[in-house]
Length: 307
Ligand SMILES: Cc1cc2nc3c(=O)[nH]c(=O)nc-3n(C[C@H](O)[C@H](O)[C@H](O)COP(=O)(O)OP(=O)(O)OC[C@H]3O[C@@H](n4cnc5c(N)ncnc54)[C@H](O)[C@@H]3O)c2cc1C
Image (cartoon, rainbow, N blue to C red; front, side):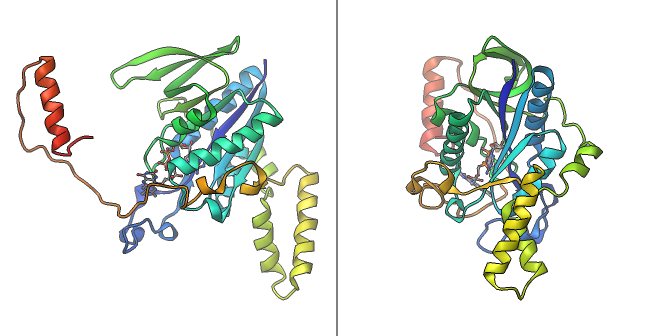
């Protein structure tokens, strides 16, 4: 049986190469000063999807929500074996926190699912910039689909069920989950295969519409807007005929309530980013009894250490 698989990938700053200019004065990330890369764990998610396609047949569609430059990650996904890709880019989605991001992504998946039932969404466990690991679980919750997180290996998909091995921190457990479902994979899963040279050549001309607009504006800077638009249309049609036009969607392409998107739909505001080094300053011995543990938890909540 062939499976319709959707992979979420995020275009992120390379936080391993952070320099002094990586932060703006207000403490937010200065994305312009950092190289942008494929969120590392999303490469494992893509590999899991491509392997399932090879084993059972089906289709892998990669989705990213981000600025037009995120199209680079989609080309890379096509090079590494994805069949199709969608860039969701819209200024009204900017500054979305995890609640708004998962709302938008789940709404997009609803449209895909209505056109052709989706069997599985595969995501990286966590993004290296926002670092919350909340988007996939929130997406599953909004779709009302079950989820399997921290997956190291998708062992089998059969009879409408996925069997996977997930990391529990101190070991692993084997779980079964009915389809459709959402899976997050960690970097213990099989590593992504390198991009195949043949595919790199095949998709190097693939573009999203906003890239065509930029290229045309650069090539014919003095041409009137209508002429530029006509040239963009011509180039888009030529690419589409060769299967090289990457779909670019906005929030108008599927059903969403704009009040739940972007800054307005985001209760979380990132005010400052700080590097915190936690240091132990002592320890306290408690009796291993329910009362003593409850009292310790109470104390930690009162201190705002947890909660
Ligand atoms: C430094 C920093 C701190 C932040 N802190 C918070 C915070 O505390 N609370 C909050 O709500 N928001 C926060 N944000 C905003 C947050 O980055 C965005 O909401 C983001 O869209 C998703 O959260 P995440 O990066 O934590 O993703 P995670 O939930 O860690 O991502 C897990 C997986 O979900 C998928 N995914 C995530 N984002 C996308 C996307 N845009 N497109 C496609 N797939 C995606 C990928 O498969 C990814 O591997 C912060 C952002 C930054 C830069």
